Length: 328
Image (cartoon, rainbow, N blue to C red):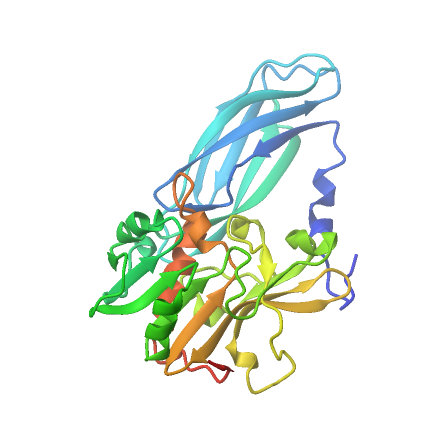
């Protein structure tokens, strides 16, 4: 199976594991974890033959760690049922690693009845801490993110002051825009329908399904992530719900200002999700990735945390020199 560019697709390499009458299904809530977390993997069985699983065991492997789990006793043709769970500790890593978690169902004589494998993005826990030490103003609609960003060891306040060097916002008002125009730097996380600059919603049903498209990130902008373009399930918690429209995408002089985007469906229509541009004497990075939303529900999503950190680091670096200018 090939795509329109004659590139092999991802799915055929797992076809061999599918045509089995008995199998284990892994239920994993997330696909990205810190290296000091433990994953709770719930196990379901698809049991369709008269086979006693009472003496079967579940073997799992992740990096250099492995374990064996007992499963529930299943007899007869009883369909899909839970058979237990496994608590799997993440390995310690120095850099982001995409590591396969493999699970095998083995009978009492060692015969393998089925197997499953899922890639997990394991991130170093030290990458959650801020590298930038300048003053940051987090000014959002709810202000819930202020405390969360402060826990990442940023010097945070909820308003612009003389010490502010970067503003993180989802709703830039006249005060913020004036501050940027006079030389400030802003990370604009545009998760809603606000059209302060360029933005449009997705126009068709197929475009809402990001997983059928090819999404990409500039690896040099996110050095603390494992970027495996096209993006895969570890990024599911931050995927954008809208595009940045109206950009002169065919102008080669500003294409380096596009930091993330995607190719929509089989028509291969390009769209942009993150762009850098000048605004007066200041600089703005605008993204439609759900970075702030990923910080707000339970434990912050590791991918969202690192995307926030990397974008702030890039915004204040000498590498962020946009050619694209927004006319004030």
